[in-house]
Length: 391
Ligand SMILES: *Cc1c(COP(=O)(O)O)cnc(C)c1O
Image 1 (cartoon, rainbow, N blue to C red):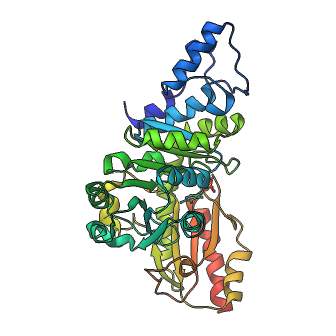
Image 2: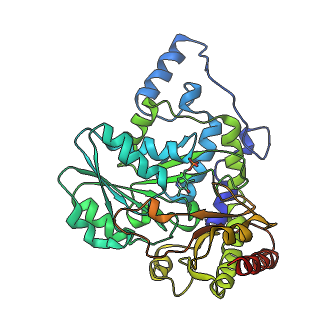
Image 3: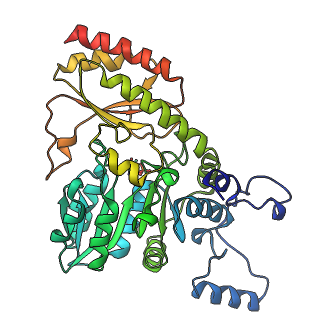
């Protein structure tokens, strides 16, 4: 079955739900047992690690619906739901760490994941080495006897640098490390981390899975090898998400294939237009043929999302304000992955320690939504006129 079909059929069972197309939303804490024998059997099944309805926090068919969809598309053996993307990242990392361990973390990682290493993990005596995203098989030289997690994110936050994930995973596995990937940019649809050697794949479901800018949610998918540790620690951390949010994520994911294709095509169109602008120093988008990460993207990814970066030529702050303040179709704010377009000034150097960003001009992150791309370009065109006039 192709992914587009799986997105429609996975995690639904109308025959056992009164013929209703969508899965029900279970609001639950207590789960009752009619007899002592039933209670005993239920406890036994739970002790065996069997998925089931034991207690609200452990999950209901509402959770299973989304978990099954994410596994079916992303390719892991098991999945858990968290109240945000960052909650999934933090729980997954804690699942494999103990005092004295070492993390190898990509330098272009999402900012709060970096802070997790530098503050929470370091408080528990876990050290982190940040590495150049372009390191590839060279990661072997950085692996220590106590390295537990090798973490990748491709393309990386803000500058959209690609990574050679299979090469990194091979070196990491040779030394017994767990390979974790933040796969939010591509969504489960356009990158298959487990086929690239990843053990745990993380999604800020808040972005493309939900797709409508109205829910915070996270997922962690694991292969059979990594699952017991991921599950045990996530359970101990009490991680769960509200059923209405899980339902909305499941519902959003049904249309992922059509939305993402449109984000990809429109994003590329806008990126190409931006590349021709005098005030644009560079465009960072791995699906552009001359992007340094293009060959890796083509080899390992099935498509691109609508998120990419640009760097402007140096200009005063007031000129940047002239560009963004009067845009009609682009909102300014955190997050992305919804149906609407966004633009956000960013600062890669505030977040890097081993791969400083060489440009002086302002970096911007754009999310291209589902609007007509020509309208989006016309809005930017007027904005760049204002920018030029104010420079
Ligand atoms: C947004 C984001 C996260 C965090 O997700 P939240 O749901 O906001 O906690 C993690 N990784 C990447 C790459 C993101 O863009």
